[in-house]
Length: 365
Image (cartoon, rainbow, N blue to C red; front, side):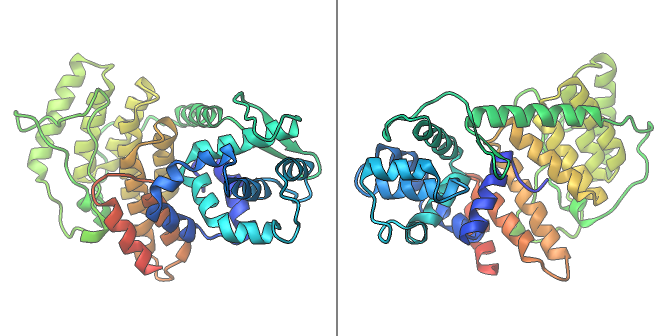
């Protein structure tokens, strides 16, 4: 998976068509969060907002000679082809609008609804709210309009997909692995008994992900003896509550921190079987798969967390760290990995040191 939702496929095509880099959009969002948050206000068509809306229509439409654009220009009086050309308007507003489409999902939905409203013959100031599909017959492109429908569909497909690939592994801890990713994970807080993990909500705890600013840990932060006690604690609890997903999640964490990732994945799979929307199970399973070096599956699990809860800062943080570790460990240092990491951290607000990490990654580009 390369994008967070199908919406991003369209946005990527827009960026590429107009030469707007992900780096530029991410930096704009970071420096102008309030403007991006309120970007939907351009549809009120006050002052320069008419120009911004025209630029946005140029960007989302596959054809600048589209009748929708011509109707909007006629209705708003923006008929000077030199002053309001796609090149000039996108050069002026393109980065801001791309940032809005990426980091303020409702702007995308509003834009597509607005496009549909103008296309349907409504006045340029009207905006419809219901879901609809806009198709370009020549190119075979279908654009989803209602963001809630997009996210709901993505979440449903992801859950069904992962339920279908749940694999029951052999019992036992299996082979212990020892790598920097596992040793760099941080054990969740423990309860007063010194064994059980403290969980937020009823999903189970989550391992902590080290910041790229502190580097890769050189040794594990936990003692195997203590974690073995945690495994025994949750194994006993599971015998009493066999259908408690959180117990499997927490035992899986204990296995992960010891390096027994196959046993951990078995527990996370069981938790997902019991609760298909358990985001902690997907999150921790991603950490375990990273220990095995299965990057694509780890990314998919984190994207599933995001599809279930689009505002999950921990998932974006883990995704950003994951891409950064790939970048660090690749001798060719592909820029795309750094851009993906930067993009993930750009989607986080008010969480840990996300802004500091963003600034640090920006300087590496």
